[in-house]
Length: 289
View 1 (cartoon, helix red, strand yellow):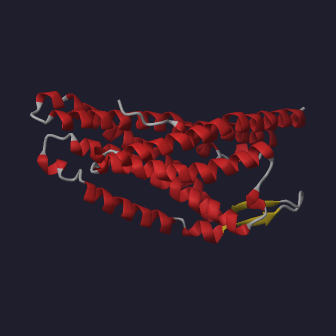
View 2 (spheres, rainbow, N blue to C red):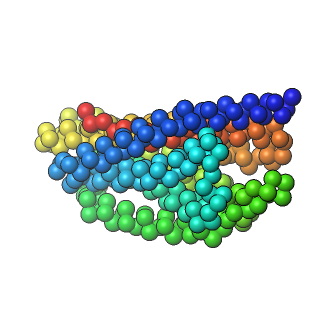
View 3 (tube, rainbow, N blue to C red):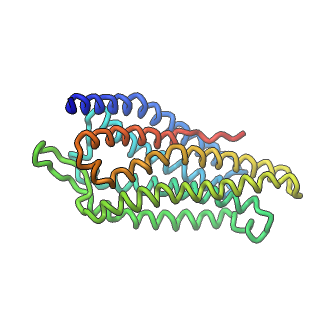
């Protein structure tokens, strides 16, 4: 009974990966590319710090989708796992996906904070919403996440199973594995960016409501409204899509679930669903009203 049940879950998960993953991949790549073209083609957005954060976010999303989701579709949908045959790709995928996800979420947080600063009453706070500040923050963040990913190059390796004789690309360091799940995935890439983006997104939304009562040029006022709407759409999308995956990562820390074959199969099935939901965030196309 359990073998048949597990087989059914695996089959459904495989079909979900194929028929949901491929449309998400295509729409996500097209949507991110459109965002980059729009933000770079208009002079107004090229000189705006919030638009710069959203541009960088779209660029790293393209890299994430091309590496992370494409490989996930090949592995879970078609049983083609390039990480099983190449040590370099095993390490590179883990490293590159980590950098892209972290930079994307960092840009999202910076964009919401920037819109809050840009719409503040105080000129002292508004001066921090500047393109030069944005350039420095992006360069600094990129350096931090590139250095943060070094352990992925060190600890991710191909491990051969004794029972199946198949290679698996996993972390060979137990402490780093706990950090990757408990700290990085749940906090740094889960709860913390969600909290920051929601907090400053709401504060920016409140400030935008007060713009009509201030003496601000019409063009600047409309630009701030457009960018705030874009940021809020991204914040809502990020919360809806990221929270289920964060909860799933918390469940993986439960030893009772991980030691039971049926529960483990259920968790893997839920993981596939939450990953598909997570990648929906990268398929949301920013639209400028």
